[in-house]
Image (cartoon, rainbow, N blue to C red; front, side):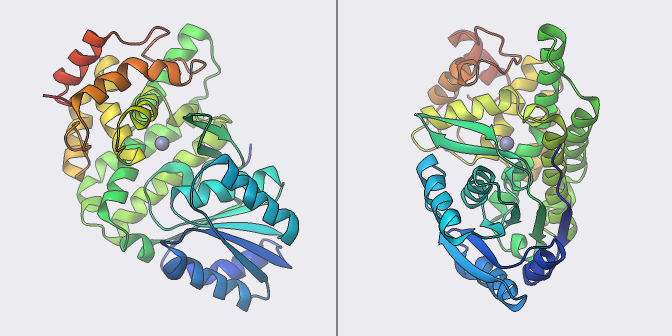
Amino acid sequence: MQLPREVIVGKDVLRRVGETCRRLGFSGSALVVTGPKVEGIAAAPVIESLTKSGLKVQQTLVESSSISQSREVEGEITRFKPSVVIGVGGGKDIDIAKLSSANKHVPFISVPTAASHDGIASPVVAMKGYGKPYSSMAQAPIAIMADVGLIARSPFRLLASGCGDVVGKYTAVRDWRLAHRIRNEYYGDYAADLALMSARLVMRNVNIIRTMSETGIRTVVEALISCGVAMSIAGSSRPCSGAEHLFSHALTMTAPRPALHGEQVGVGTIMCAYLHGANWQLIREVLQRIGAPTSARQLSTENKYVIKALTMAHKIRPDRYTILGEKGLTHDAAERVAQVTNVID
Ligand SMILES: [Zn+2]
């Protein structure tokens, strides 16, 4: 079980990355993996802090979350020999830093600039390659440093998406229990409860989150980190990823313009909660109050793509048993689920 050793959530955290590296025993050099959008606002202060602490720094810019991009960064790790890799940015940047560092057996620090998905703290990476999105185990960050001030300046849509990803645990854990009962799959109460607790905390604090106040952002960031820890404890993404995630991956493949990961997961959670016979109305209401999408239209997609994604979701990852079963939903059943839950009209 790999768990983070330091989790720092607060203001002006970027300036403390250098001293944190020192405290964790890193010396020599550090590789900062970041993206063009956040380079100036986030990576620059991180690099300044590292340099001040006496580390030699190299920066590399990420353009896509592809296997080939990870290979490039692995090449840089081989050449530069950093004692630590620091991912600064959103999904892509963190994922590439996580995967490349894991492949080269170098520790990695996660510095998220938005609270849009639980990859900021998990050992799992979501990559594009081989024609479909897939996720795999890489390594957990040795430290997570989330700057609340910085995240507060990111678009609200990203925070709402993070809430969708967390709310998704409501059905992910139900799927896990189902797989345990039907397939005798390993099930861990502790990891499951931790993931569910994160969902409950977000659902209970919608009003605070909506204001994007420091407390609201902290609630979402801590929930995302707890989800990451739940995956570390379970040793897989099981507690955090069920049929709602399969739906999201399927929609990413079918829709011409996919929405954000957490936005799609949120809509998937409404429909999967219905399939589970659970309180889908509650999920819908929570997402609506947060300001996250609850329909095909709000995902800027068409009904037909939602139906298609529902019918093909079970094929995305056949080893992951969910409420969709082995054969998945028929077209008519998928249409009805989406209609009853007001995802399509
Ligand atoms: Zn997710």
